[in-house]
Image (cartoon, rainbow, N blue to C red):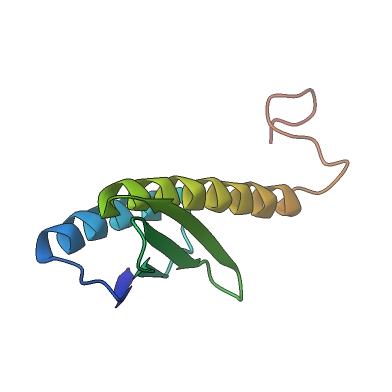
Length: 113
């Protein structure tokens, strides 16, 4: 998986970058089409750092997690959690679309194929 980092008005240290990359790689287990992640960090002159994580889920599907916190790692964890919820929601939607209405499921009478 490709992980890109962009910092606006703030530098991202090597230790923070390695930590965030390891956390970002862990998100790949939630969706098999997760291809690219872009992490944007912005400091707007205030006390907070804004982190935005954008995930490409294939075929024009995108998910974005955003968060603000005083420290980079805290903001990244909150944004990653928001992104995880969106990825799981997209995965459930894809799985539900594959099921046809009226077709029996496994575990139901007539559904054990």
